[in-house]
Length: 326
Image (cartoon, rainbow, N blue to C red; front, side):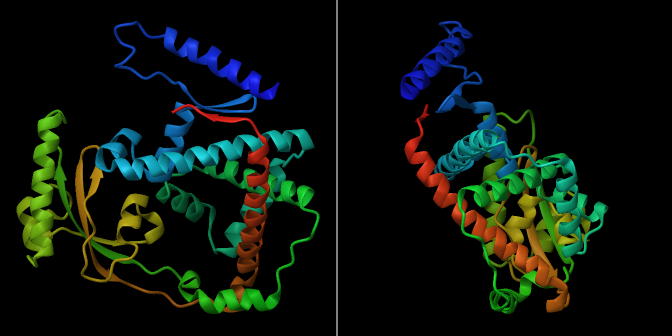
């Protein structure tokens, strides 16, 4: 009965979606269509694209244009997450699990305390990750609901041992360093004209030529002065020092594993392309164990919750009616 209900729902909504388009434009336009049916719930194209933007910081169409294989893998990963979310939310409602605003506030205050963050520092860190404070509160609430769900579904108590906390601290020293600053330089090549195919083609050609010259050993500063249309161009692309948490997530990800003096791959934006050079990385001291042990406990606890959650959700997915509509 559940399977039949899901199929009927899909057919009905698919008919509505198709009817919104005239026969002449059906092949040229895509409406906010259904991309998956999960029991009696739906995942829409709008939801999927929104999550892809949040995850990658890019418009899905631009991501597909740059790297179709990466886009397909990302789309599947995000869709799987949304399907799991639908299943989880249904179970949470069935069990009557509720997390209050007060509990969310308390959890956020603990996170701030464990990470030595002020409210302003937290908001700045979230902004660097492309997330608003409202979205973050929703995420914390979801995490708390998941913990209660696992506590309900998995009867055995999760126990984190002190020796495991100490071991994690010893094996991840970089994770507990006081964040140092980064000195960066940038070459920015704007997208000229109205952004049409020819303009993008010219942009790609220019960026490729500059990038190849950089890899062959030409000076970043010289090419920045010659080609860059961004800040610091006249100073060889130097744009100053930054707290890593305040950086745009695309830049932070691009330079995360760079050594001093190395350059990032081109970072494509709607209005142009950036190439970033990590001039210098200033490191801070490692925070003492006693100061971070509660935060480590939370990390290990959440890892164990997630491990049990994914085992539980895998079993639940095998029993649910799910249809992907690509």
